[in-house]
Length: 110
Image 1: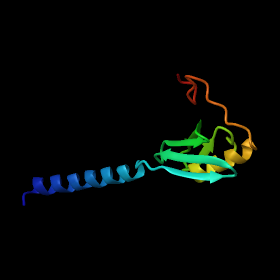
Image 2: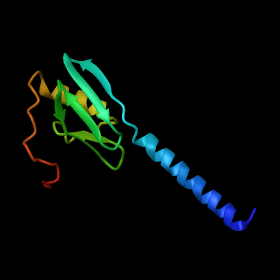
Image 3: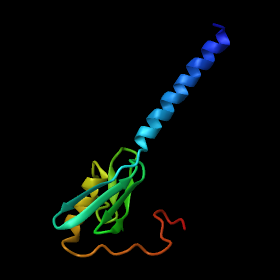
Image 4: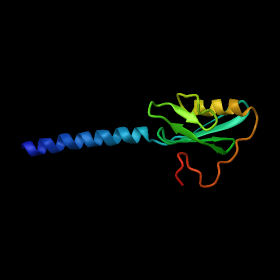
């Protein structure tokens, strides 16, 4: 084999490995459970989780440390989006989750 062919094969293999790792981290899945009489649905990806409580969206943000914060419990870190949603349900104490204002994006961007 020529040196150029060996380099191309090595680089190509590394790119494929990186793509496979990225795809696995971003794989979308959906999980639904009932917790304290509320229906929690977690979908989306690890980086951008989509969390709903009784069908209403709950804003959950992923931190760089791999922890999550919800709009209701923004002083407590949770290990997963599901754990953040469970804590939000506890904080709601039976109240309904209010819809997010139209056009509101966390961080002040619109």
